[in-house]
Length: 289
Image (cartoon, rainbow, N blue to C red):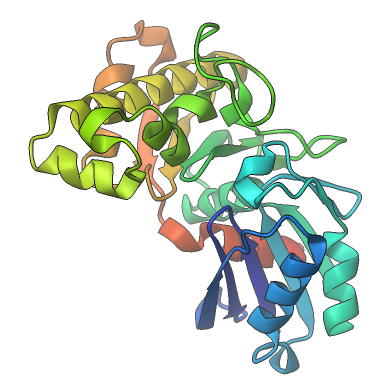
């Protein structure tokens, strides 16, 4: 049975037809609306799925933020244009008239990446570094979501008590430093106003400040991996997201993780499904797999 999978991110919305063999047959993308209104998000979702919805029997949604009782709550409102609350499950049911499942995007991606490991590990962590920093934890072969949907929001653990204020309201979160938004926010001088993609490009051209910002992000992420190893005793950590999968980034994280005591070392892997992990994980969960 084909599933309509939807991925709601801080910068883009994606929808795809996922077949029974977990293959993407068709995919569409739109920018995430900058407007703070629920109406804007609803309209964007309607436009995104309209050409696809007649071909499916169920809907699976992977979204940034906390999914609680079918509603989307933005832990960091900046990642969703200021949207604080949105009846996500009911909205898609109303638009499609189909059975619908909704889950946090990093939790969904963690489930897809766990399946990609082919049973080699029972305990793993997925961390996505993109507009924000998210995560998902699989323990003893089970995806942890939490009673309130908060499980795996690793980007909102403490990295620096004297660091920048995070969009969630805390000071010094991993997300405020390591994410694409955090990298861009720390840029000064000639790099002020540049996005993370531009900063990575400048680093490749030898820009010292750009390189320093990326190293700061990778060092922060390595410390997060060490913390997660201590908390979960995971067998591997899978890294995804536009920053996490950027050329050379994972090698930097490995470099800084190697500087931690041996007890906190863990195998680091690049996301197998890359930028489609959230879509595929949501489809797997909707299928009960």
